[in-house]
Structure formats: C-alpha cells, structure tokens
Length: 165
Image (cartoon, rainbow, N blue to C red; front, side, top):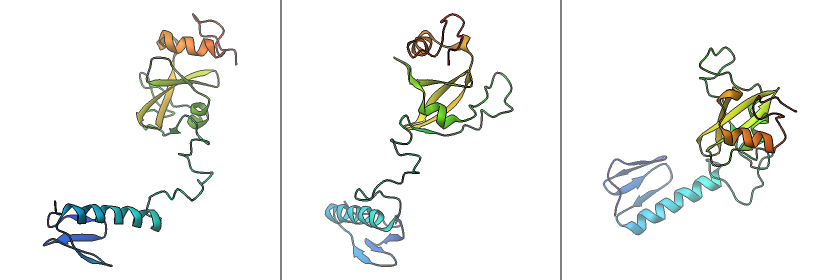
C-alpha cells in the first residue's frame, strides 16, 4: 500500500511516489515504507515539541488536562450559556472548573451535578474529558441527581432541595 500522489503529510508532500519535504526525499512504495513514515512522523512530533507528549517529561502542574489538577475533567464554557442568558437558556456557573472539581457523578446517567453558591450546576460531557455546565433548577432534576445530592449531604430535603452547605 503506497501513498497517493498529492497527499500532504505535515511539511512533506507525496508526488509520484516520492515523499519530499524540507529535510528528506524518501521513496515510498509499499506498506512497510508507509508504516516507517508514520512511525518517523510520530517520533519527530514527540521529539520536536510538535504536540506529542514525552512520557519522560513530567506534566506541567498548570496543565488544565492534568487529572491530578482537574480530577473530573476540564470545564469548557459553552457560549450558549452566558451571564445574560434568558429562559429557557440557563446561566453558566461563576467558576465552572471549581464546581466541576467538586461535582458528583449521577448514578446511571451521563452527566455530573455540582453546587455553587447554593445553586445546582449540571455538567454535560460533549467530548471525552471536557464538560460544560449550567445552572439547573431543582424541580428539573431527576431522582438519580436528587439522590446523589442527598447522599453527599448537600441537600436537606429531597422534596424542596433546600441546601445544607
């Protein structure tokens, strides 16, 4: 399996079965050559700071995707939810990452629930490890979410949603 002419691979271009770029002309014709090229490009990316992660390098403590810093994922603001949102669109949390870090997994559901300033925040995960959140009214919560808040000791009454903390 060779590479088709005209394919662009990073800084290189395939023309007539030859990969040319700023540093190398390489003849590509079989799957082994393609596999070698893929491995070469991965190694180049890892060693040049081009986006790959070096497993020997310690993680940046300020890295927002570091699971030690953000154990439940990264909060990403959704522009649909903003401080001037009008119903039926809810407002976002004031500090989404902090609320997400303290949030609870809702059993049997694909979202998390948190509390900020006495308000309930629902976190959806549109992409793996990334969440967006918005203020949710207690009356709109399902039984599983109410149970999670009750079990965590965050609400006093499961019927009214009165907050303890």
